[in-house]
Image 1 (cartoon, rainbow, N blue to C red):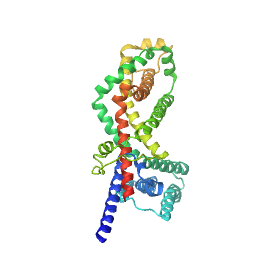
Image 2 (spheres, rainbow, N blue to C red):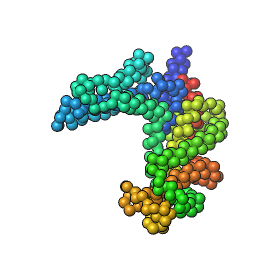
Image 3 (cartoon, rainbow, N blue to C red):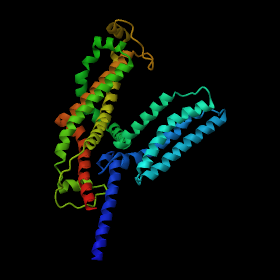
Image 4 (spheres, helix red, strand yellow):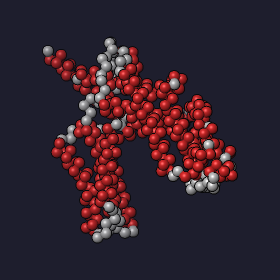
Length: 388
């Protein structure tokens, strides 16, 4: 009886350790919400500690100009920045074990972080009668930083950003293939509109702030299209949990040694998990579209420099064109037009790559394969947790 008992305990412990390693794999893939029981106090706040501590210590930089002059100011600044960096490194190594944070510790952490933007102006006012910082601005900055850290940790944005950079490098290396297939249909849609006089008149008067809003609007449409497509894809993928699919998906993960004799039952995703997968999909689509957009921007700028002479630009606009402040000798309307068409072309490419059969196979299928793998690994991970 005793050997069987200890064998069962050993098996449960191994399953528990395997589940923990798989949870770290989810974090590295930018899908931390796949972890069972994922919550603010159990997973998010511990991983936020390095960022919160670093920001709190770095907030003391506001005190550097006070009571320090000459080399002393730079020494104090170096000490504060070194302390912030050290706290980041130490706490990052500590939270890898995901310590359990009690309610009292949670309250202490949040109160301590919220007190920094209040204490710093008070210290400034104590040392100097004319404080250099606006307390309201400091509070808003700390609140915005807290929200940004919460979103980054909750949805694995840091890991997704690293992955996006790697994919961007890969896309640039394969830019001939990517752009060779993407640019011709985009140019067919946008090329002749580039020579519209009314558009040049509008772009000559439109400030860059409004152009940025148009670009953001196109990006939002891309995200909405990705969200609509993701619902259909998840409904299809969740049903395909055959043993051969699971074995292929788990290869190269901590679950690679698992054996599968029968299909696993599908597990319903929570809203947070669906949003996390949407972020994965939208990030990849936006990065891929950005590569196409940069190529379109360069093409239209080159085309404008070759075809649109200053006299032609003045005739279309009806007045001397506004010069671009950061590119001497180039009309600002040309750069704004190029930006507008690059943003539109990027959105068009991202949407078509999710719907057209050939484009989907070339550009969208790899993103879906990553989501399929994540869902398959999640199903096996939940089965391992049940064993433990």
